[in-house]
Length: 480
Image 1 (cartoon, rainbow, N blue to C red):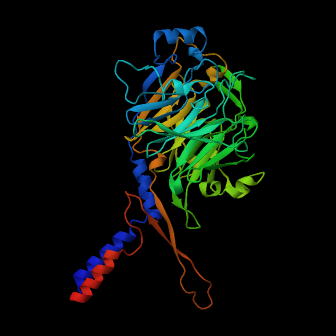
Image 2 (image 1 turned 45 degrees about the vertical axis):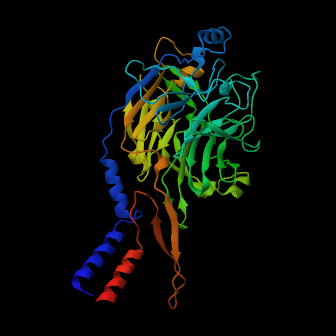
Image 3 (image 1 turned 60 degrees about the vertical axis):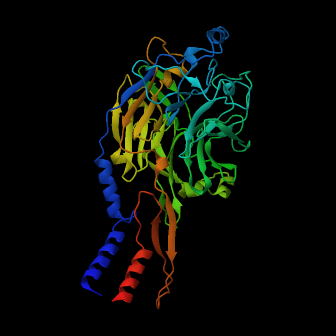
């Protein structure tokens, strides 16, 4: 081989070997990229004393007020997601007087209106109480990269009122196609052994691999757990674990600005980490979660949750299936992961928003990125847009549950900052590892060599000799 050709060949092998996304060197590069990010300060983009709606007419508004179908202090914003030019928000029907449970406002605020009225989604009719074809009480939802909205609906309204006489429907998961503007819906009714009449579907994350999976927290007092929905097979099952999904009595007391409340709330916030290749050579992800009444963050692999057979056991998650990530300084409601594995979460009692790089030690690397005793009272849900902006809902839930909402002051805010990354939904796709079993050497057992591959649009080829290199070598041999 000529020196020049050998040099080119060597350089090509070096370049391919040098971009292994699973190597320690590349992890260091990713960490440096994260550390070099410039994050803006959080800014208030929307705020309301009370939430109002775009009514069909003034007469409809007056009728709703006079009949208590609309009680302003009972309307609370909880979840949000951005798609196109709309910001979708949830208004759970925890109390009576909430005319619509799912709505939208402009994604970009106008200079003249920072307290916009909510537009019921997809219509007023689809938010009718008692009509099980529509939405009853939506706490959270997600929008995948294909433009489908995954809406979890508890089916029950006025959940804070014992023995409510209002009609109820089954807990459902509804997929809404947002792409064509027709809002075509596909609804799935959860079986009673997964989400019964007393379930409370709280939060949801989506994994679009293998046909699509959803992981949903059910923080009901009677049967808390994590529900798994398999979109391809249109099936669901539930994992239960008394060690990690049940409220901790030592973390059940909440104190914010003089408001005291004891609440035993089970598994609540949930976040999905980036894809990785596990020790078996399979594509996997880590699911992070925490009860609201807890100071601990837990994690379990999605490869465990996808195994429906494990969910039939009385204690679904085995001891080794769930781990304690570490302790937090306060309770957490909402949380979210970005595409690179940075977790953002609220610290309710600290009036703070925190972050953690999931590639580092949790106990030593939590960082408070915003703290304000007035503006950050109860961090609820988070969301990303395609421009690397992070949004967070602040809703003073501690005042809401105790009927202490003061309509003469701001109670609900949406904050925004740019964090330099997109949602966990953009985590690079991976292919399972290629396992090569070489012939065993004398006096040695069979060995397994695992080569990692990626099919991310943003990733380079991994440690494998590509076809074009082989062709280059053959060309050289034939013509020299």
